[in-house]
Image 1 (cartoon, rainbow, N blue to C red):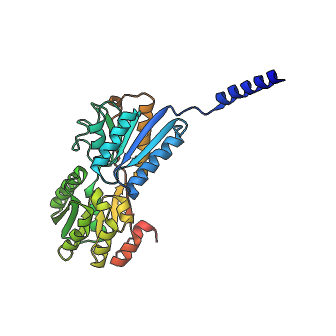
Image 2 (cartoon, one colour):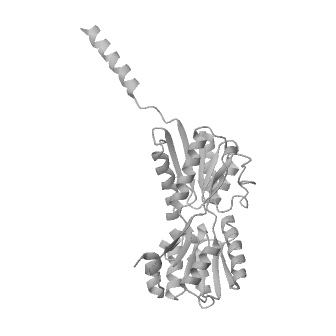
Image 3 (spheres, rainbow, N blue to C red):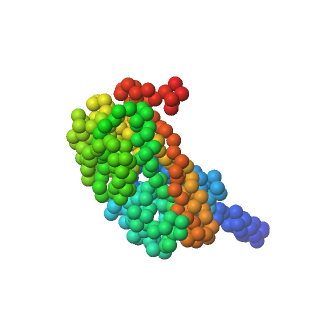
Length: 312
């Protein structure tokens, strides 16, 4: 009887071992610059698309880390990914991508939400990535934003532009924005910041001096966007933003990128990398589709008619 009991136990062990779930085949390291709705939207879309495409938790283990807006923490996180030997690193935003590039020379990197990968020093040729880096760019199109501004609040003669000069993404977008304003014969004044604590003083300094405020895809400003918007609304000054989440935080409007679509595109690139496609065969994709997003509450405070975009 003991003999049969032993055989049954052994058989059960073999069956259980055979039925145990297999460990994930891949490891994906996601490093996000900071907690923010637009960046969260990108990350969520990436993970959702991976799950939908058959790269769920049983196939690909996601190690998500948030750097809390700290360059030092970005480097630490990426170094840990390298030490662990993840199959691909996914940095969200330009600073995160630059940190990943510095830390990982041999691990594939697929970035998301980098406005100008060439200027950021990540690639030299969008069509032919020459090292271990590719991804999806959220190239900002200021001409569309300023055309929308002219439609909603015509007659603007001077803009205030708030941004952190330490952010490559911001500098590039501001350069494009100022070139567009110059082409339109509109003047501007810059309010430069280096940290979130300087955002409110910066926007306050512009009140009474400008007709509108433009906020680029600036991560520092984004973290204090609700406060910036409150000051501008109190002075009845419209704020136009380069990113749709900043409109949700109080800016009047944008003609901007769909970050869910951006995340989905990045996920499809990640899947190609996991399945063995070399980075050199995956060109950088530039998401150029844009849509108008308006904040009805802000529009009401400013007395701006946005019914064309709300259907009301």
